Length: 397
Image (tube, rainbow, N blue to C red; front, side, top):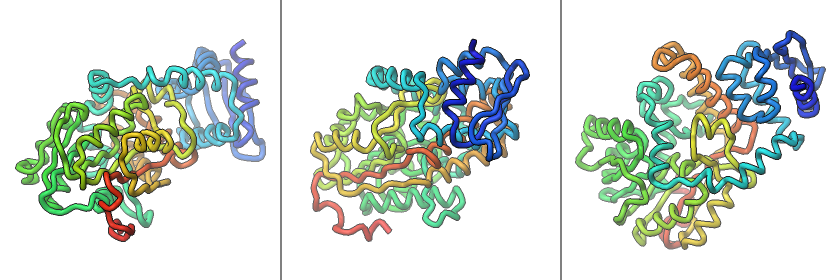
């Protein structure tokens, strides 16, 4: 029964591109455009057919990470590119609509991230061993989108460019007090102190990141001006000249957007500048892929610009600039993938082969989402007055 259902689903869905699927019973099915070279896939377990029919988005990632879905030459990029192309065509299966509607109905519950749950979500992803991240990130451990002005930059240069671009948008001068919400491994905070003589109060919910960041600040000779703290942004009660948040807003959750931006409003001085750097979607509001929620970013969500702007307007902040980065994150993820593959043996020694396949799927799927789907990066500059920042964008460049 499941074999027939699976074949009908796949035949109706795949119209762009081509798949050749070897089934667990040894039979072969071909679907899609017969004039193009197919992506060749082997399913090794009969139970995969049932799971793919009942919950395709979750089962696809699980089957790959469990070694029950094998792609010729491990060409995960091509398989996902074909699937995304057909998803964008509007030919969704009824089961996909059903799961999407269910996730939409339960979205506020899934993204309910009070302080304790936020801490647990962060620990799930960011409190993996630092050595893992050191094996595929740049030397500064920047775990967010790099900036590629020419497209030819190395990963390390792109991350330096990203920090410089952000710092220019903050309109810095010596002596300013800066809040860094979601301070990661401390690279931006340390650069703010070293390059602009500012003091930085960084907050993270990852114990590993807090420890590593403070060690790095001490080694860089800026521990007197930079501190990284294990603290939820909602627990801060102070005033800052500048607020920056890079790659953290994806973990806030829609139910907490009002609280997040009201906190920025409360903490920012009247002549202050805030810069929010977040992954976004160029289309309408949506939901989070169930595989990503289960295995990578529990409680996470990528917002549409409309969801952000509605709340910003309500709390009275002034939007002084918006910049949208398109393929920069696809290039960043491509660099991360290469480094991940180059160090796969060391990463497998830290964890196991299933973990490596899970993270490989995560990195490739993320790149394909930026390259072929509606994923982008928003940089949103916020102030309390329309006279705080310069009248033209020349200072950013």
